[in-house]
Image 1 (tube, each protein chain N blue to C red):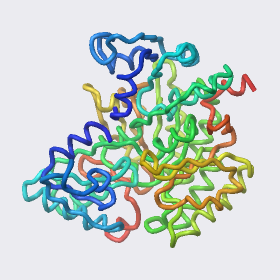
Image 2: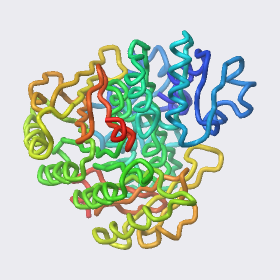
Image 3: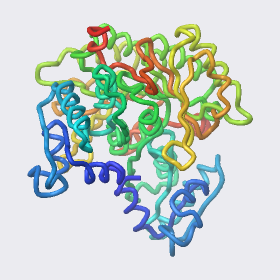
Image 4: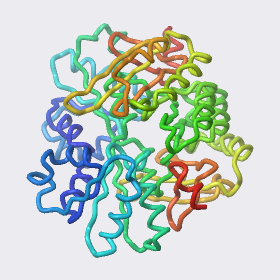
Length: 238
Length: 238
């Protein structure tokens, strides 16, 4: 968490967020950073309702924090709140989007340096995006030889998008292509795993808290590190 | 800067980095955060020499910080240092890559919420990557309808890659596609500019300190904000 984000949470009167994320800020939701604040928490997939409540509280004159994990601007709450402000005719509310460290960054650092060259970020959740659009994007990212970062790779009920992604990836990239999987990055139970592409589906740790980074044609393993070369240097020395 | 990065700088004995970035940490390079530290600074494009000096100092038993702006794992120093460690046979040196807020995140937040859906990150610097590879990636990213984030979009001497990118973009996206340009994000002189794609090349502020974010087919302007919808919601309401 950046100092700017910490200050925003500390100075607000009302805090709104998915309960699991609020617990990361203050494990018992009252004794620490969140002491004395009005707390509005809800479960997953209730993003619109959370954003609506945040706007109501702001219109009533309170300083409100709407919390995302990672960076709120990447698959987070920034878009939902800005769209809803317009629909509710509440565009006079001053908004600050406080950027954070997104999973691509926090996970890459635990694997080595897989994002030293151009990369594509794709969410495998087909709740909000049509499965065909997702598949088309995987094809395009493969053709462009992008390193690919998959967010929301798999859940208990949603197995197929990752299977389908894996099948597409194998059409373009060798079975030995390095893949990194990071779960719960920068939390107490973080795990970082490196496997060749061919073994991706067998990694049990892939769930909604995981991020998957698939190397491009130049990515290599260097001891315990996954590295995508920045550019010509590697060519000259190999 | 995250608290983890701050602590790493505070606790090190030797700090190595591009002079302009070190000045962001401590404007006179001695009175503040950097007081009492050995400082090794050098100009741009001397990444390999900086990394080499950092390794020498670490081998001599010092705690060393090698500084990048943004996230060191995204076009930063993480890859250079890991590759060089292997070449120098110094893989026993313990390394921590401290993630940061990359320009895609810090810039997106100033424009609205352009990265709510899948996106591709492409550096337009052809110093380390062949111009043809860059062009191929722009074509692929356009075909996949990715939002595109361009790093290193233009310098005084390097005008052509952005011109070429713009020509390619116009083959796939309407001239009115929203584009956001952010310069010196989160610094005193930050600037955020929104233009339609057709006017991109005329934006004088595009230089090496700028980041350019090009919307996908669904990106729209909402008052002063650039928003890419997360998914189906927009379809239902429009």
